Image 1 (tube, rainbow, N blue to C red):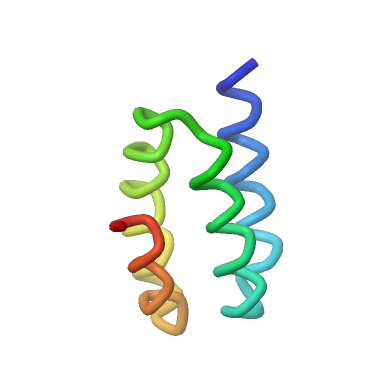
Image 2 (image 1 turned 120 degrees about the vertical axis):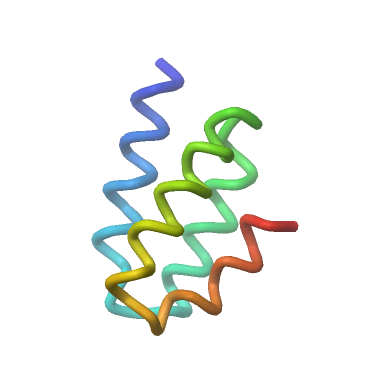
Length: 65
């Protein structure tokens, strides 16, 4: 079940990546919902994903808190 939430979270973040404010809001929700090891996986994925979208790099502070 947990893996499904992680995959769903990534899908949502990809869909809202056009708007940094919406991306931040969804990322905050994800941090509240996911388990610690899933947050680590999400952090690694975000580092990769934001290489292609530099406007989202500033959003990484949320996952590093």
